[in-house]
Image 1 (cartoon, rainbow, N blue to C red):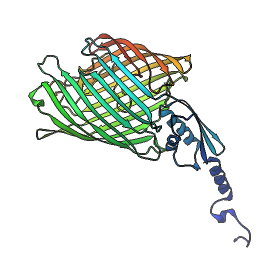
Image 2 (image 1 turned 90 degrees about the vertical axis):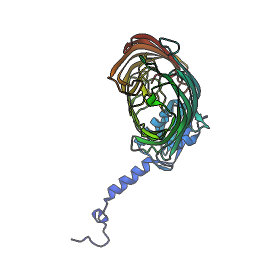
Image 3 (image 1 turned 135 degrees about the vertical axis):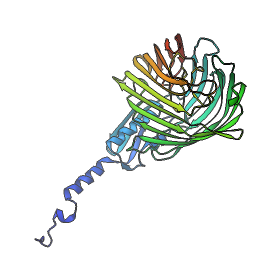
Image 4 (image 1 turned 180 degrees about the vertical axis):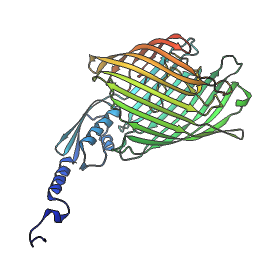
Length: 426
């Protein structure tokens, strides 16, 4: 039967009238017209706009507001963040940190020559845009190393961001039972871009181009003779659900980075590929207590000890802190593959005025496949250390955490150790 003329029926309109009204109400309830910012001084408001999923005015869901808060924390520029909806306004209140930070690191070993020391100077908010630039100089691996880098923050929601570095690195090579001892020197760098970090996904991606000149000095196996150039590119994927906090982070982050490459030497091309992966997870029991687990797996194409990994005490900075096995000499355990984990229990007490004292208990352990002086891969060995430490956490300073760790390495070479620094170990 047809409806009488002049009478409207909802089913004839295709969409029920009640649904249309509900959708209109939802759109109105999630509409945000502008941001209202409080506490921003050194950090420019444009940084917050870069974190939004879309330019305002726009509809933002409750989940997107929560993700905005997580990304603000992830910048590492604030020790207090609050995101609150007020009708059609998003109110963002923060408390900024001081961001120009010097970070010295010192680690002891059985001999002074096997110890390490470094000095890093980092500015995490260049031009007020959350751009991180820094430089470091270090003595470790029996040689001197230096590097400078710069990169936009990694939480851009709608734009490509950039990173780059230039550096010189020296590495000393010594192997027990052989007459060979040499130094490898590299000069070069990389440039890269990071794709937009869209809301609705936890993944972000980056691509890099890499190149460096490599020279060898000293006595080494004839099969390693000759200087050359290493060229390659990198691809990095990060799954990020880590809610950062200076005292007790929550959630997890996974990173995998592949680096296909080639070494050009005296007309001979040799493959130089590597892959690095890290899983970082934190279980927070309160805003001051947490258990953190850090698991790293790395591998390199075998055949040349100049293309290898080290399993030592030095925290390796590769866009984030990776860590190692505390108590091991940093130049003795070159390998084609290693897997290690760090487990830390952390508890902090309030000293007042944005100062905290944090106690730490840790266990580090792993396995690795050593390389000998000609690049042959030898049977795997285990590594294990235990200990405890204390940190002073001034939350008003970005990334600065005075640290002392002490403990005992149990394998592969037993011994007591003390490590100091001005950052968390991982």
